[in-house]
Length: 375
Image (cartoon, rainbow, N blue to C red; front, side, top):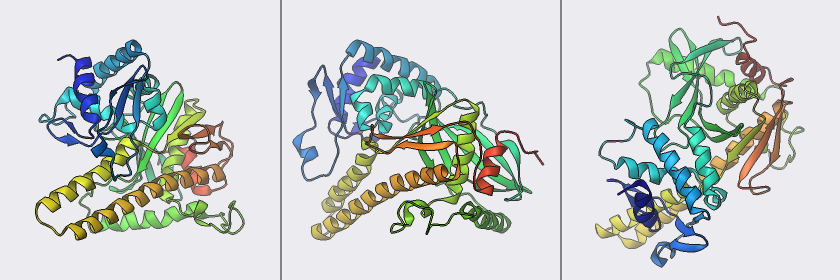
C-alpha cells in the first residue's frame, strides 16, 4: 500500500471513528471532505452524548494536497527515524499524528498547514542539542544556558527550546518552548514545564528553591491595583508563571535577532482536546465491563471530563496572560489580536528591542543579544 492509499483508505477512515490503530491506539478524531463531498463522516454513536468538537479535513485541491502530504512524509520519515517505537506502524504514525496540532482553521486549509509543518522540521534557531552558555545573570547569580532539542512525534512541534540556569553543577530548568518558524513567522504552541522528574540531591533542591524565589523579581514594579485593565479581575496579569516569563523573554529576543516580527500562538487544538475526553469514555466502558457500579463510574468520569475542560481553559488563559505580561513589560511587544478575533490564533507583533520595565526580564532579553559577558 502506497502512502496516499494508506492515508485515504486507512488513516482518514479510522480517524472518522476516533481510533487509529498504529499497533497502539491513538485517539484521533476528524471527518474528511474532498471537493465539498464527505469521504468519511463520523458515525452517530461517536457523536452522541459527548461534547466533542469534530473538525472536518477539507481537501479542496486533491492534487496539491497529495503533493504536499507526500513532501511532508518524505521529510518527516527522515526526521523521526529512530524516534518512533519500533512496535508502532512508522508510516501510519507519521500520517496520523500530523493532525494532532491542527486548529479549526488548519483543517479548513490543510495545504497551508502541511507546508507549515514541513518548515517546522527545519531548525528554528542556530542552536545544538547541547546546552550553550549565553551569559551570566547577576540577578539569578547563575549562568544561563539554552539548547534546541528534537522532540518526539507526539509533541506539538519537532523542536523545543530548552533553557536552564546553572551554578556549580546544579540546574534549574525553565519551561520548554515548543515552536516552529514558517514564512518568517514564529508559531509558539506550548510553554510547558518538563513533566519528567529528575533524581535530585538535596543541594540541587536547595539551588532550585533559591532560583524559584529569585524569579519573583519579575513582579518588581508591577502594581496590580493600578496597572491592569480590570482591577476587579486581578488574575488578568498577576496569575502568571515567572519561569515562563523568563523563557518567553529569551525566546522573543532570539526571534527579534532573526528579524521575525510576527508571532502566532494557536490556542484550541481539537484533536488533542478530544483525545483526552475520549480516553475517559473508554475508561468508563472498561470499568463498567469489569463490574464497577455504573452510577459511581458515570459520576467519576463526569468529574474527570469537567476537570479536563477546566484544565484546558486554564492552560489557554495562562499562556495568554503570560503574553500580556510580556506586552506590559516590553515596549517592542504588542498583542495585536486575541483568539477568534481574526482567526483561531493570538497574533503578536515583535518590533526592534528598545527597553523593558523589569530588571530581571530585561537582563534575560539582553543576554541573548550578547550584551552581557559570560562569567
